[in-house]
Length: 250
Image (cartoon, rainbow, N blue to C red):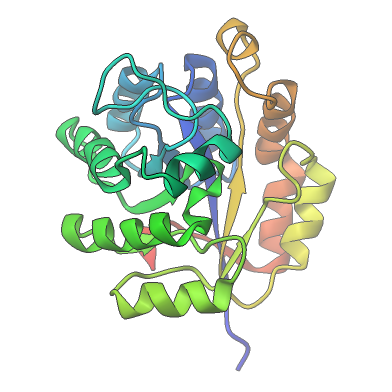
């Protein structure tokens, strides 16, 4: 018997700007987006919480941030601006990783959101200290699902499972970030392997807030939104007999 193919389509950066939030909700309501990850230190956090409350069918997880924006522990103090700066901060223990990430999770929960999963902005849980922290937070806050890291997947999955965490069988989307089209997305769906796959994406409306924000992903978010809501994308799911799911369905 052939194992079913299941797909979670997750939008990162919920709460980054209001126009990103708008695009994420449109991708859920009109397209194939089933899940999103919320930034507790995002400029549009309150707007994202309001939208999440109005759209209960959307899974919402924690997009934990150690790069970009400001720390929740010391309001007004910036987090490292780049990944290489985070590496130095971790090496010299200039950042309290557990305390910062736990504060972000608490802020989301206190806003009335029960997170379904944990992942990290800029994939910082590739670093063992951050991955260990996610495993600890997963246990303490009873959020079992953790995004499968980009690299060392077999070793990372084994580590997470030893700590009671769950992962999807596959993770995809990194190489195509900023380059998705409806044609590419339909091809990806047709070639999906058996099991459960998380597809990371970054949809959004390219409005004035996003244009002035510190990110390289601007016009590409609009293109990803268009790909997610395209009729041929939905048709590809049906033709390939791929189940569109959320983590709460698994």
